[in-house]
Amino acid sequence: MERTLSIIKPDGVSRGLIGEVIKRFEENDIKIVAMKMVHLSQADAEKFYAVHKERPFFGSLTEFMTSGPIVPMILEGDNVIEKNRTLMGATNFKEAAEGTIRRDFATDIEKNIVHGSDAPETAAVEIGFFFNQFEINDR
Ligand code: CMP
Image 1 (tube, helix red, strand yellow):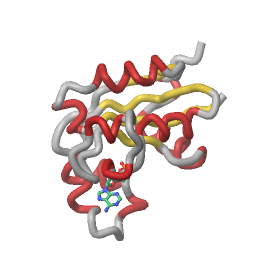
Image 2 (spheres, protein in one colour; image 1 turned 30 degrees about the horizontal axis):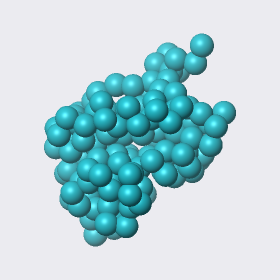
Image 3 (cartoon, helix red, strand yellow; image 1 turned 120 degrees about the vertical axis):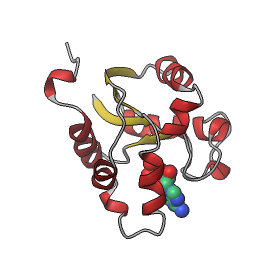
Image 4 (cartoon, helix red, strand yellow; image 1 turned 180 degrees about the vertical axis):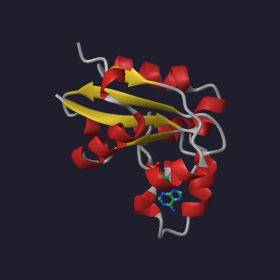
């Protein structure tokens, strides 16, 4: 059994797509074991996306991620990291497969509705960034 961090980004929340994203997880037998709504500070966003700090889009990305509330969730299931990435589609929505969340709803490479961890190591760090052990419903 694997876990991953999913985030519904500010564009997903403000456009009323929380239910749509969650529906796709539930329809695909992905279990949500933790969920909250938070509004990141600039410092929090810079910490979360620290791996991208040298990239040209870092300033814009952190500004966008602090522009409104987001919904981080812990997803659980067999092979859930890969499964979630398949449901999300490619980072660039123009390259995302039909029927994926980003293909259906993203409006540009930054405003792409959802984030998902890309590997077990990053999933563990990203889960720990948003949740403590008491917030994870694993019974
Ligand atoms: P995410 O999975 O949250 O991880 C980093 C984010 O940076 C990515 O999704 C995109 O939303 C955003 N981003 C903005 N510009 C780019 C770019 N040129 N290449 C990759 N990611 C980008």
